[in-house]
Length: 357
Image (cartoon, rainbow, N blue to C red; front, side, top):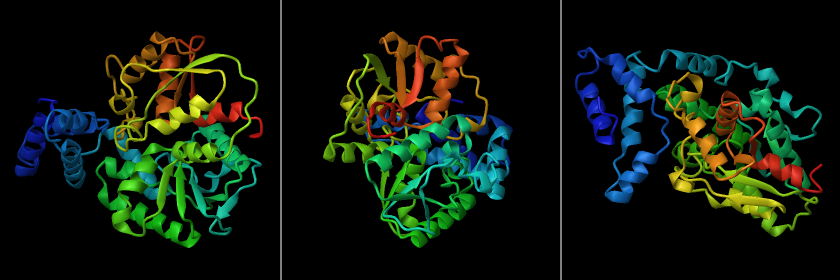
């Protein structure tokens, strides 16, 4: 089968036409559709040359069909769906431990308390202990900037993994529950750690209920920092490069706010890699691939780390928990931990500000 946009569209068309029950290549089609990272590059490149082909809509429709016929998703991707059903998150983590990342930080808990801004932490940041510092650093930044915010006392998955894996019923269930949480909390603005939560709330929730102002945390912080001149610590020179997450840049055109923040930090020399902004190279973790071991050769994340090294960067910065995980694993796989470090925008900003603790 061709992996070009037209080839995938033809595959999906024939799958629907023959209802998948009369083809001998059910697993081939499943693998083709579920190996896609849904990064949106194919749509943007097609749009640049002619009228954009809605290839991601076709892939999503195909995944939905495969899920309904019990053919998809990939075997390794079935457990996350089961865990969302049972635990409200794709990792099977206990709901009672979801706020353990807070530690001793005092933060408003909604809807028990009230606040205008909701910080939606997201499943990966909440349950991956390696990313707890990211959430804690962002909380410290928001507190230092005197933002009236809180976190959900009973936060659950935004539903994005369920939809990407083709389980529409589960997506609607999670979306309905979250909208109810938002309504009870009385919030006006939602800020997220994950570009995937951000894109889902911004683009997929409005048709289901009340609209909220939805911002990725880099957008929110960039705006606040422009209005409040921050005090930075004495900086040592560092060369950094920024990796654009697909669901921030290629899906939602949020490319400047993270760079604006990095340019504010004294001592940082921001250099650009090949393939940036809306032409960014995917880390390889989107579209449900975080939940399955995909043996690309070379791996997208490995290529990205080499691109960062080639432009002389000491630090590879991103603004997505999945990108952070994929790129960190790549640095370890390549045994380059003495050459380059992966950090999040919130992490490097927190370390640079005088009054962020």
